Amino acid sequence: MRSSEKDVGTATPSRLIPIALAGSALLVVAAAGLFYYASQTATGPERGDTYKVTVADGTCEPANFTLPAGRTTFEIHNASRRPIEWEILDGVYVIEERENIAPGFHSLLTAKLRPGSYEITCGLLSNPRGTLTVVPSEQSEAERVQPPVKAFIGPLSEYKVFV
Image 1 (cartoon, one colour):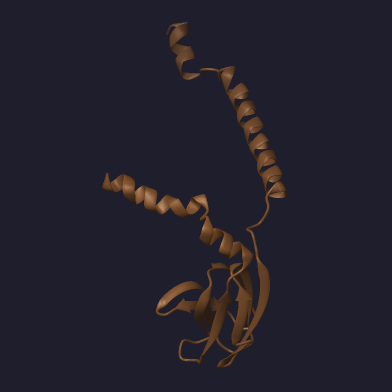
Image 2: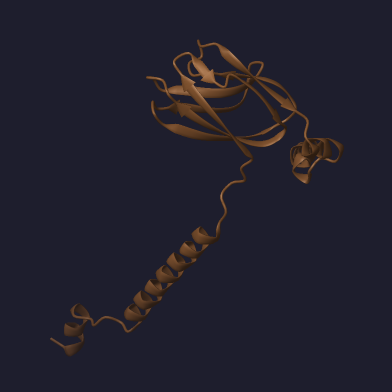
């Protein structure tokens, strides 16, 4: 056999493999560091005023709300013996909802509410409903006069499809 035939089966690793592995490890460490930095400096979603709601068997406490328009956070506590849901309804249209809140647990629901009158479900859909009255606020009146830029995204995209 020739010496070149022997070397084909026992090739030595290239010098590039350790460099590639070191570069990959460096990228992983850098990505982990950037992820940690981003998670420490990130802010959570914007919350509005927080209202606590306790859902017991067949009732909500409080069952009737009056609050200002804008971003509002509801902390829903399930004090009943069954998993429940809590919904904000405008007629048959569900504005916001939280489902399957286990007994003894609580859940947060954040909604941007416009002035008007809404119904709220108190636990099971067969339970009596409460009322949620949203009154105009300074912010909602300002948005009514001059809508935010985000309000134009939907109509503009539909117009582009039309054209």
